[in-house]
Length: 160
Image 1: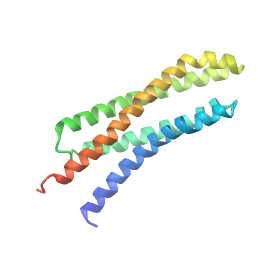
Image 2: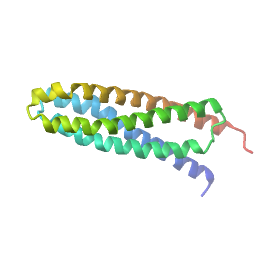
Image 3: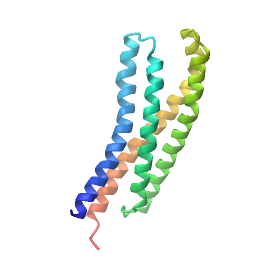
Image 4: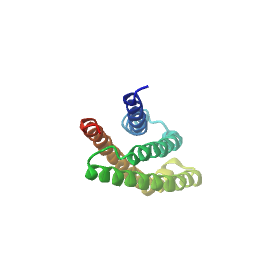
């Protein structure tokens, strides 16, 4: 098999992981949560509680795959590589924050059985979780754009 096949396969895996992770987050936040609210689903938080475990796992796997891609140094632009590593660091820090916050949200949900009191008690933790998720999502979008630019520059680089 030619090296171009392996390059294409590697890039596909990188993009598939990123799209699975952040596409899942975007779909859940943009479609599932609003539908749950409109239908007045009482246990929306319980569904989200379980889904976010999988989103965080997908994030960990994706960050490993992205790290593998960035270590290659195929991009001729040092500046873009630096930005990609910075974004990777921010996404990793956000993931650590989400993993740290998740048990706190779980604990509040377990301790406060009344749904209206639970919503009030969980609010500060949930707002923090949403902001961290949003920062992570933004970094992932920029990472995807920079990766495409990086691969384009790599493809246009003269062969050695």
